[in-house]
Amino acid sequence: MFLNLYFNRNYMIPGLDGLRAIAFLLIFWLHIGYLQIGWIGVQFFFVLSGFLITGILLNMKRSLRAGEYFSKFYGRRFLRIFPLYYFYLLLMTGVAVFLISIPYKPNYMKIFLDQVWYAVFYLYDFFFGTIFFQSSHFLDHFWSLSVEEQFYIVWPLLIFLAPEKHLKKLFLTFIFLGPLFRLTFHFIYFSGVFRFLARNVELALYPLPFSHVDAFAFGAYLSRYSIPKAKQQFFFLLVAIPLIGSAAHYLATGELGSLSALGYPLLMPNAYQYIWGYSLLNYFFALTIQVVVREKLFLRFLEWSPMQYLGKISYGLYVYHFPIIWFAGRLFGVNPLDLSLPPHSATIAFAATLLIASLSYHFIEKPILNLKDRFFPLIPNQHDDREIPQETQSASHA
Image (tube, rainbow, N blue to C red; front, side, top):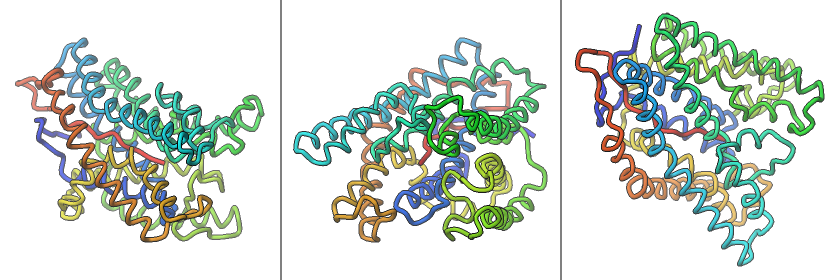
């Protein structure tokens, strides 16, 4: 059953800003070293993007001509994504050049300057999985933004070309292609053909856009169809997923692993989780969206004003948080090799991220967002009650 939502520029789907907030908080807690399972926040963002963007595209397809369909979608995406994205890259380039001139951590700053060009052209995800990649708190998290942008490039064309009667087949095909690609990549990697790939298969696989097509496809499926008995499945998997992950981890390693990973450490290197684990988690996130949007669970918490606000500025929170965490650690002399920040550094990092993202939203993002309806207005067909849900924030992780 199609998700009937009404479009106007002030409308919000109840609960979704709260879900964005949860996704960001998971990522933040990962990066300050407090929650190893926090990397799943990125997967959550991917499923949310598939859900919201597909709903928008389907309704634009029904109400707009082909030229308007593409020009208005990409025009609105341009205004939503590019200004903050390139402002950040320019800002951090200036910061890096300044710190080199002091000099302060010049070798670390040079890593950013050497690699930033891949982010400029939205190719950082492909670079991330190679032996040439070097970690940088200024840039590491941008791999997921490259994945999302590549999804925005390809998916509108597929939705436009797919007949309505074949949509379910399209979504199910891409849900199947996710684990199939990961399995195929596993065999290709160990064939040794591509020697430029990262030294671990799970790291080489993780940032590739093809590895996450099932995340977007699960969200896309949910924009048009319902999952049966979603509430019962949600609560069952809420318990079963950690048990499955911990059991798999124990069978593969003889240890339960970190409690905060819940059986799913970053990159999921054990028990071939990097092949099947993503699909399991993506399906759970699709269930989560359905029980919130259609069955109205957890709305009191998700509609709580602090959660709504964090969700509204989640793009900026995601973009700025990683370098701020790095600076907060250096401010108090935290060893760069330490995997977690002390509480006082973590508190300062969160407060600074919230402040900078808020300023960015009100003085950079919001004025530009207000131009979307001026230059690329969406006017639903008056005779069609299937209208367009509000556009998603773009944010990911890790």
